[in-house]
Length: 264
Ligand SMILES: NC(=O)c1ccc[n+]([C@@H]2O[C@H](COP(=O)([O-])OP(=O)(O)OC[C@H]3O[C@@H](n4cnc5c(N)ncnc54)[C@H](O)[C@@H]3O)[C@@H](O)[C@H]2O)c1
Image (cartoon, rainbow, N blue to C red; front, top):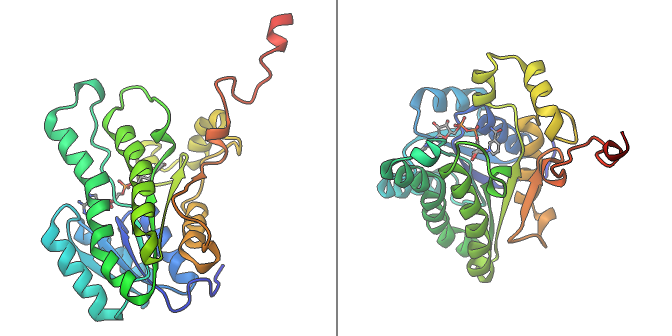
């Protein structure tokens, strides 16, 4: 479905070479934006930009490299003359839970948190000059629950929820809104790989902890991102938006009546 929600706007989407990131880029384009896909994987990034069509450009770079960030911003400005939207989507899942090494902590936090802050700082002067902008950070339901064997990734996402508030506070004077979107289980490269492409099985496994009884589609999460990026969300900043099929609304009793068990 296409709209004119983002007509005339331009967006940078990090991690755009993955199934999820490409769906976000395609949705922003369908809503009228021009998109720069930023990706460390040159093959998937170039393929994603091709699949997105003429309104997409590809920047091959590493978001943990400040020089690459500067070149990326210069490339976006020389292509479009403005940057309206930044979607911090790229992430690292490298996490060995309690056995994580210092290097794993440093690298994963660097990709998932520090880079989002550095990218925000890099787009800020341009957004300020043009009268505002919108930044969306991809967080996760993992930011507020404990999951077995995972330490660094959930900590990074919790920190990103807080960073979203900090950015929103200090960028508000420049008319830059900053929000985060927390997906639940979403059909993505990792789900595709782990289930060997079996969407039905993935939905079955996800059903007990999502009120919707299935994983989300990346396009469904992308629609929330598109709204937050648009002027329709002009009153929304500093907020974490659940796009999780009701995962975070459900308690430990899940969706089955527990009290009757007392009488059984
Ligand atoms: N998949 C899910 O179910 C799910 C659930 C909740 C939140 N999320 C969030 O959604 C986002 C996308 O998740 P995904 O599962 O599609 O992840 P993914 O691992 O498939 O994709 C991440 C992309 O980022 C790129 N990337 C990694 N490091 C980079 C770097 N240094 N510079 C540039 N690009 C880099 C990777 O090459 C990859 O294409 C992430 O922020 C993730 O935390 C995903």
